[in-house]
Length: 482
Image (cartoon, rainbow, N blue to C red; front, side):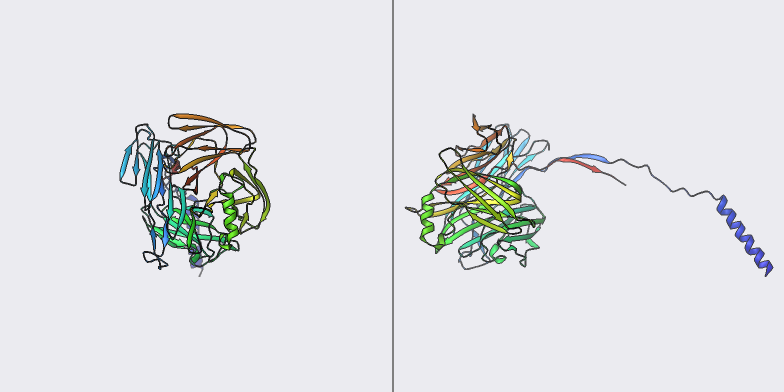
């Protein structure tokens, strides 16, 4: 026993000595590498045009899942033709840039894109480089009106404010995927009753190169007031809402509702050009099916706080008298407010809100005699900008450029139209309206912030198209290798 104890103490002592004299282990280390910084060029600028209007029912008119295109849309584009760039037109035609601006008109039925190919990756993007829009006058027994929209850059998120699925009203969500990657889409739909929480709003397939058409009545039946939020996963997409009205057995009014980008406490609405005021009043008095032949403000209030709103509709001169609305819109819902008492004239709108809101104005036009018709356009709040922008002007119809000066001080704006240069003064918190030359784009050079839309009139029908500045972003990327 004693011998075993002595052996145990001896082993423990040797082990303790090894611990004390052993050298600490050194881990293998590599020299830390600094991050590498790379300059990434912007993706080539592409704007996609949605194509012509669609009607449900297929060839027989009885199918609820089949849709067909009606006639053609007139597309107008303006390309700066910057040297070292090439314009691809619908992947079929190509224009080489030699420094002379090209204004282009094409007709399309299916969605198509204009793309500026920039091999250097250094050319500045925006509407000065490429801009396009489309219009279509339709007089079909199933849809009738002037539909207009900007051709836009594919993206992954959209908001819309406009549309209705009440009796005689149809709203189609048109989603096109111009990319080479399949996309899935999730929707949120808000109405006068709040968030719809309808079934089938997520995981909607939009295959590459294809268009998906969704009747909004399949999600929100008989909704009077609609705002829609769309998020795409996978390929970038373009989207519009096509809204039409059928009064009795006659189609009477249609428009493309464009993306709504403005979430603000103060919004500006250029282009409230009122015509046929007495005719719209006669239609309203003739029956309930014309009850919505009325200029109207629509507001969606996100969040939990109600919005206290003031809408000022102001004339462009001292002879044109507008109106003022002081109203409250409930949180989480979409609410409509009639804009009454506007005689024929040129106006613009200013909406002030206690909380940020999304908003649009429905502008109506009508003729009660002769070629009796009703038409309407949904006008989103205009983007304010103080840098140069260009807008393409359709080669058909009468187009007017409406510019709002939101500042209290007067400003000047320079308009470049072909080889001509025009300088116009705009008083503080005022607006001007300039008639455009068909087919000839306009460069807008402001000296301070302004907002602008173009208003197109074809055969008395109405479309309003925003002045946008689509561009892709370049930048620096840091890469670390471990």
